Length: 276
Image (cartoon, rainbow, N blue to C red; front, side, top):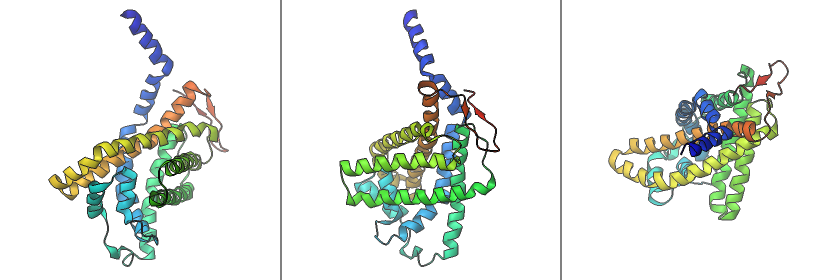
């Protein structure tokens, strides 16, 4: 028995799982995921509602975007559409200044993601004028979500799965590099992008199995509030995967790949050392 316990301890130490758990605790992963979900619901969702309502191809509005992301179908997707869908006059009553205001409110969401990536790589916070990076990232995020909805009906089976995997990896790979201002090499960021996409696939399967019946039950029992709570829970999972995927990629790189000690600094910044 003692021999087995020693083998387990050696395997645990070799994997570096304790380091991964400690880094997740230092990053306040769950707290950060809950902040991500709150900002997504308050600042990002209104902007996406307007963008989806302005879609000239009429892909069902924001509720269809959300149902596709959560992997919902049938009655659960119909319930979500009944509760989440905005009125048809949303575009006619939204001015250009209103859209710009919504975009400005969405910038803190990009800032929270950037801060999470900076903490993951032990980088100092970027200067205020990097806000253009957050704005650009927000625009590319909207385009990425839109193309995911476009391919829902245009492509099926292996073709759509392949396209979603490729675009997902490219977006999260580019997103990390762009928000970090190029302070971390491309090859160091790829494991995190792959882990993020793998986590989102797992979350989609969990959502299909758990949230699909839960939305219908909550709509009957609690009405709109119950559905919103399910959506918020799903967004917490998305935030956990996005930050956790980047963290897992960093840990995997350190312990089972290129074990570097310094991240090449940008001009004017101090070198970043791995203290894990």
